[in-house]
Image (cartoon, rainbow, N blue to C red; front, side, top):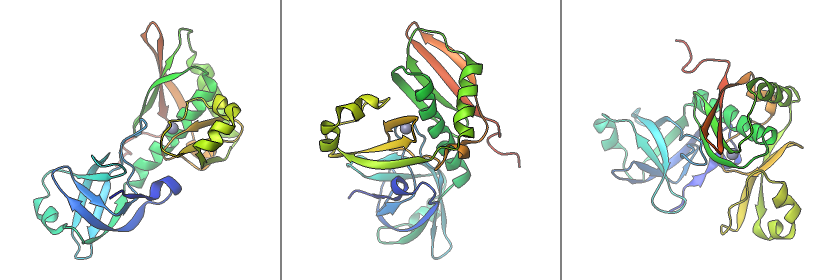
Length: 246
Ligand SMILES: [Zn+2]
């Protein structure tokens, strides 16, 4: 059974009520969830599942399951007693570690802004709470200070970031729209989710984003690497440290 993906419509949602559908060696499947599974370069969420009896199960990662649309919550090791209580049909309150998710959102939107600043194909992407990196297929050199300044300008402009769904029929009818996308949309699913940063970038993406570029805050290009003759890697860092100081 496909898991209802609450995070696709509302990235602010940190908690939800859900029912356990299946538990196996891989982890737990719920009927609905706020946990984003690793994908599109973005790390899977961490958090916890709380039962009405007070049991708390810590979730260390979230992955896509073997079945289409299924999301697996991977428990942290050493929780046998708690796991024994989490059986199919049990109601849970699913809560993500929202401070970590917020960093994924800030970094993810920043990578889309970077795509607008560096108009070359992307052939790799990783978004974590500590850093984000994008690999561009290009041979020209890039300048750290220029890119950091470009990102700061978009952040200062406080541009709205919105998602919407486009059908493949609409894409076929609008070749200009497809051409304008910095990443080409996948086909075969009927509809495609796109992230639209007003006037700056439009691309297909299933990830979680901030609602406005101002929410990214202070961000910098911390490293540019020449990974190969045709690949330039750009690494982003946030001004506030992670994990946060105790
Ligand atoms: Zn994206």
